Image (cartoon, rainbow, N blue to C red):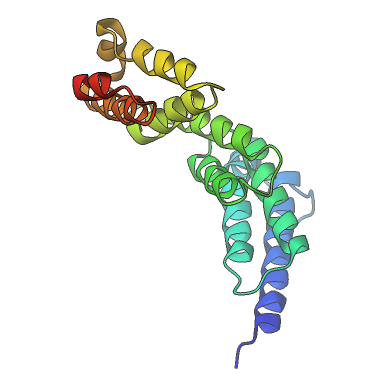
Length: 195
């Protein structure tokens, strides 16, 4: 029978095995067993460095999926995700996990909103066709404005002809819908009907 403690033992073992495998690959230990020609060793190191963020993210995900979690486990998983984006700044899974973690910890992590915004920015950079990340980044930036008037002005700035040409009709229609809802909340029924 697998208990939560047994699962932790398995997790610790797999983390140790992963760390050893990565260290062997990254450090390129020069023993007769691991000695390689320069190009092969460089390729192995590049491969290990490319895989490292994915391995770290998958291990962090395992920790985050534990049925019971204490704060130290959450801290470890958070540090692992942050390390994965540092190790692999071009790793989409690492940035996506950071975004998910920032959303989940928004009330508990002091800089969660900034982390989410950074993750969305990087996801949009890595995959410009990711319209969801672009939209979420724009909406998050707009929602950071302190007054409804500032948010309305920010929405309107994305609904000009030039801006719509850059962001596309789908994203513009979603922003127009959000603007209409905001106008309705502020009591401007005419503007609500306009958008």
